[in-house]
Length: 251
Image (cartoon, rainbow, N blue to C red; front, side, top):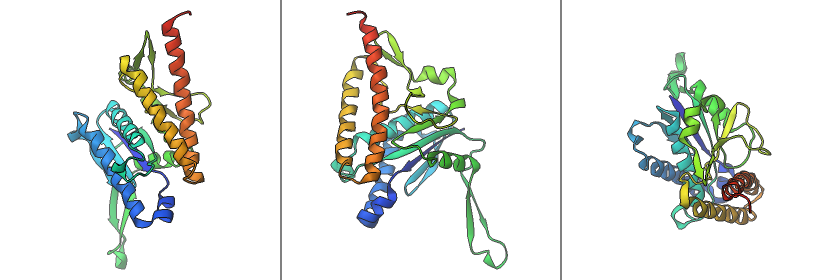
C-alpha cells in the first residue's frame, strides 16, 4: 500500500489575518481539490484514508495511483488559486508519497484508570514519517516521492514525450534543495505530451507569474513559498527548452 500525505501551508497566517472563516475556506478548498482529483480517476472507489481540517492522508493500492492523484491535486490547487470559486485565495500545499507497512493511519486508546474517559489518538509510524518529511524544512509547493518507489515501471508510466525525446517528471533537479531519500514529482509539467504540451506549459507559467505577483503583497511567508516554487518551474523550463532544441536539430 502507498500513502499520499498532503498538508496546507500557512494556516497560522490565515487564522491570524482572516480568523476562523479564512481557516474554514482553506479546509473547503482542500476537500474540493481532493474530490475533483478522485472524480477524474477510474480507481477512486478503492482509495481509502481521510481528511482532517488542513491535511489529508490517502491510501492507494499502487504507487502509480498515488502519483497520478497527487499530480491532479497539485495542478488543480495551483491553477484555481485566486479564482472566485475558492474565494480569491492563494492556496499552497506540500505533499509526500511513501510506502506503507500497514493500512492503518491511526489508533485510539483510552487512558488507564480514572482517566479512562480521555482518549489518546496515535498516528501510525508511516503517517508520522510522512508528516516529519513534509515538515523537514524544504520550501515551495513540492510533492516528493520515496526514492525506493521510483522503479523503472513507475518511471515509464509517467514519461512525457516531447518531440523525439522524453521528459521524466520523477526527478532530482540541480539547484533544488534535496530531501534525503526522496525525489520530486514535477507536478507542474503537463502530463499529456504531444501538441498540447506547449500551451499547457505556457498557462502554468502564467499561473506561476500571477502567484509571484500576488505573493509580493501577501507577506514574507507566502513570498518564500512562491519563490521556492518558481525555482522548480525554472528547472522544468530548462529541461523543456533543451528537449525542444534537441528535437528541432541544428539550426
